[in-house]
Length: 296
Image (tube, rainbow, N blue to C red):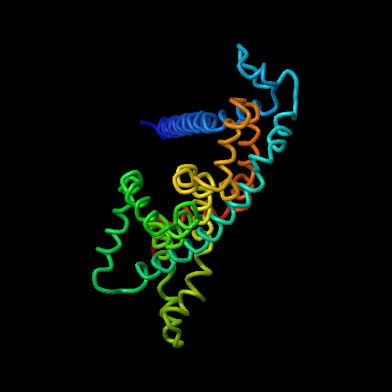
């Protein structure tokens, strides 16, 4: 085989490999695009419905762009404030979720620091037992939890929605521990040489370097608490002024009948804070997730 033939074969093999790589990437991008579209589609339908008149919502064929744009649904949402007050529901949700999530992220960071950096007997066994609790469905503990909170006199208060979250979740501990294992041990060793305590190492070294995963955990906790409907429905069955945003949105149907345009307008308003949170914290979110599996 001549040198020219060998060169031609190498070029042909290179072209084939490149074509395969391009085809593989194209398939991946197509699948990702379809997946993204499937997630965006319900939101687009919700947004479109919120600007439609009632008679157009169930017309066939479906109209994605309203024939006649109207903001009457948004006016109706706030016109029933005597019974369904979205602003009050939003404030209640913030008062429940923000303190609980903030304390929970800090508690999870404390536990994760101990599991990642401090050696003590049974450390790994305790950690795997903690992670194992993530496999327990929430519905299994729902009734015992309600009985316990009822016995403590916590029903019809915000305490059942706040206190458990202040101690952090197993998922938050897991992700934070994995992130902290990626922080070089040489930093804490240098701090020990300088006479710094474990508490000082946690506050001055580990915590500042773990900001991405802390923000990620805060986002997960905030979204879970903000969108929670089952918990408030179980524990907040009394006074109207204590109900959360999700309960208020659900009650739009009870107050105004089944008017989907008004329901969708309320949902659009409710989703704005979570979208803004993600936009501001997106960089930290991606960094926290991508680095959680790394270790030194």
